Image (cartoon, rainbow, N blue to C red):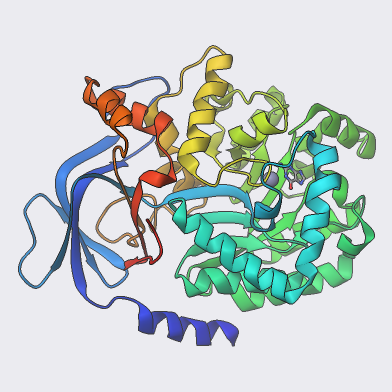
Length: 444
Ligand code: GUN
Ligand code: ZN
């Protein structure tokens, strides 16, 4: 019911005109090979027009469109698909940059108290609005996000995304042990809340539901079994959680699930690992874990700024790719320090450098556009600048200050230029964000 009303509202405000945007178009036709700066999968279309009709891209062409297309000329600017964040926590804008703790202390000192406040409807509503707007202001037009344990806060989050026409996958957090009492749910209450939320929001416009056990230590056997049953009942649901982020956490999971061969094994042996599973971190996995992830077609959401900030460890991206595991890059705010995925990709480059590897700009950007869309089974809709896709688009300045402009002028190839832009740029370079064919207000 709620959904139907919101769809009508958002349609009526959706641009129903034809318009076209000009700039230098960058996207991917497939996954660029690791460490190759020359890649046939990079699609670079300088000085092209993107034609948008309603909420879709109608055509991409070099010649200007006819007079019935309103034109927005971005000249030399960089045009990319809207960025996709595959792991982020909506309530955790409130704990960004909290000082001095590793994962478990950080959760108890900062994060759980902040999430407990989302019990209050006003705080939940304002927090949801703030989060969705913040994503857009950082160039993110689609996300797989954690809500809190609260059903009403999750409703508020879905509604806020829906009002912006945004692609959001989220779910009520499941946690029935080892968290403060005011944040604990119980199996049957949680199941009913999940089923209500799924009925209200899953498949409503651009929204989808993710079953969201926080991480193995905060769910009992019974709750994990209930999560698996939800997935069995509707295979179009997503599953999001955390895995093998921090060594003390891995040890704790070993003690809580002594029969399990590994942390990942807790999820895989309970039917929680499939093509629509996205697990954050995955730093401390072994070969068998990687091979199970690969076989399931599941995704690791590498969260580099979070891993550095919380001191969790260095994720070996190349090793995961060589095992055939899908890898995306995510912000993991508020463990992560920025919602802007360019900042997180710069951190990802530095992490790989510490491991003796080099991440190209192509692998990096692919992991937050087409690669992320594929991970979420949404590549027919987002992640590409192509006729038929939903018009989720970002437009970026190359530089705003003379020093960056000077540096970019010295680059000798497209990869050098995009790489320097990626390492040095951030959301202040974002000029325009288009969500489902509509230019989002309040950007830049
Ligand atoms: N593990 C369980 N919960 C969380 C969380 O909120 N953030 C991070 N980074 N790891 C977690
Ligand atoms: Zn997280």
